[in-house]
Each structure stands twice: as structure tokens, then as C-alpha cells.
Image (cartoon, rainbow, N blue to C red; front, side, top):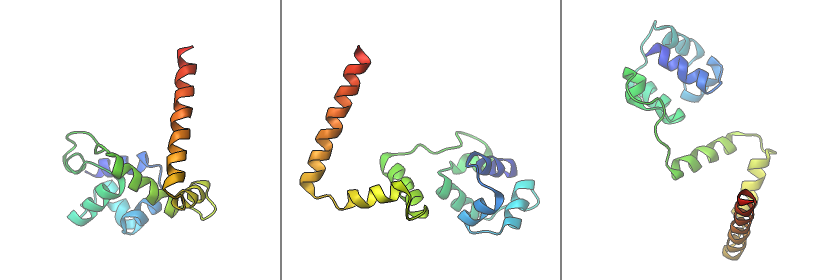
Length: 127
């Protein structure tokens, strides 16, 4: 399992400290997991799986795919978590704040504009 934990961390492009902070353990504890000196407790395994969308069976045994399939709601929740952890002046955060203030008629207009834009791109692809 130690190699798979390291693989998860490297796939997220996080340092040991950043990864450890995300799952609530010390950098030293994570280093010990990665070299196989210590085995993480079930709670830590669950945190890794939840935080990084990892298939628990793969993490424990190496069987199956590393990532769990993502449904739309989980994808949105993950995106929002990333946005909220970001800087307050991040464009994504400012955009979400503006979208949160739209009323129903503004959402309808936005949907019409998006559909029109998609139709234009589709026309361009056919030419």
C-alpha cells in the first residue's frame, strides 16, 4: 500500500506536507506510510479515499482502478471545494459569487446563451 499512497500523492502533484495537511496527519507520518515503515489506520485510508476520490479497494490491494468514477454532483462538490480553498481574488471564486446572485430569469437567459454558443460551435465543426 505504501507505493500506492505515494502514487496518489504524486498524481495530485502535492508535496508530502501539502498531502499530509489535506488528510490531517503530520508530514512525518505520511513519509512513514510512503516508505512502508507504518501502515495507516482505517480512518486515514478513508480520508485519502474521500479527499482524492480514490477507490479504497485499489488503495488497499492494488486491484481495480485508482480513481472512483465521478458523478456530476461529486464533480461539482470537488470543484467548489477547490474554489473555496483558493484565494479570495481567484477568478473562479468571483465568478461563482456572481452566479450565486442570479435569479431564475437570469439563469434562463444564461442557459439560452450557452445553448446558442454550443450551436455555433457545432456549426463551425461541421464546416
